[in-house]
Length: 146
Image 1 (cartoon, helix red, strand yellow):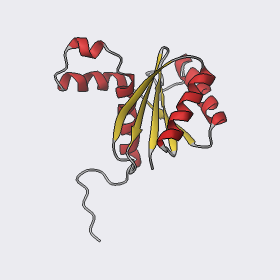
Image 2 (image 1 turned 60 degrees about the horizontal axis):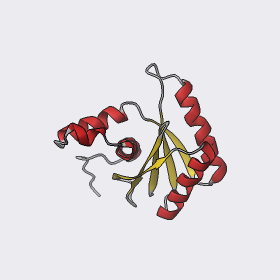
Image 3 (image 1 turned 135 degrees about the vertical axis):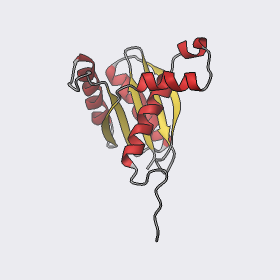
Image 4 (image 1 turned 90 degrees about the vertical axis):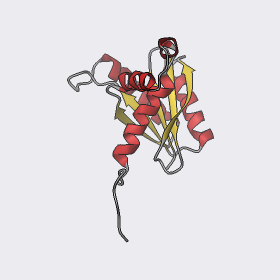
């Protein structure tokens, strides 16, 4: 089940997409924030063009797990998405996605100048991969006999 993921920030919106089997996430694009309704429309259009069956939206919970001002903004965005599509829209905890994206960039040997570029699409891919891993009943290393 092909899945689109959104990392919605104040200025930019990172988009990632999975493969057809919903096993691997990859960065797709970065949109500039316009307005809640326009952003939702753009996301729905991309999801439809890519043949996605669901949309995962990164939820920025506070450090204690509560819903703060930023998460309330994302919940309003999720409502806009739901009003514009029949696709399933799934909130997903995005905790530490930016830090994990930076850490991966460092491990790849990228210079700090590269890390200063917008990585919103890569953060969306981290969020989506976390969702896919949690949703996949078969984890790497599992052996299943028939």
